[in-house]
Image 1 (tube, rainbow, N blue to C red):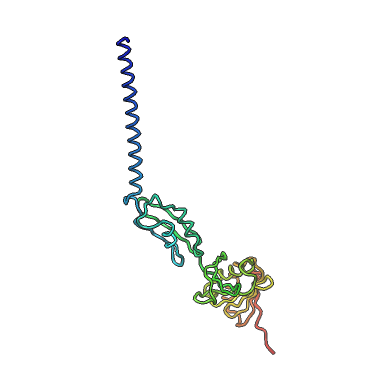
Image 2: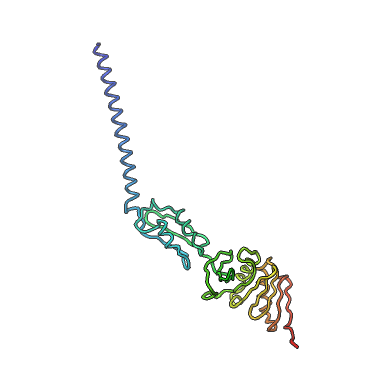
Length: 243
């Protein structure tokens, strides 16, 4: 074989070998970087050192977050923010929640809790409900929470009962204490500050609550019957004189 051809073949072989070695070293370098990054993300340098829950008062948001993986010492990369939020939202007291990872060490959870609106008697039990009809607590009696109470209706699936809850929630605080509402035949009545109140149907109940407050601010005669069925034209009837 011509020596020039042999030398050329050897040069080509050496070039291919060098190229293969360079590719192998490059791949090894990339794998080393990836392995280091994976190790770093799972190391104490990027692990949770604080879980901060803001807005938690009545709910178990912190405990639910820990059970869902938001706990001190866990690698940040393994904390699934969406799963943590979903777990917190299973608490009936929680209306909304947002979970954020703040690298390298902080999990921040912002919770918005529901506010009790009224006690509703359904199925022989008293349910403490929020304005959106969520049951926050069930008890044998409306104790421990100074909220209006609601009797009658067909339970929390009844739109008129839910309207009564909204009316109770819209009452001014000084009027809500001790208020008693009743639902019957699609109509809402109430006893507020010892006044009989005819609220009427389930429409415009928030406006009706404001109209009632305006009437009561005029100090009507004790025992009067107040009608706010038409909230722009509330009526006050004097007490019925007993023979």
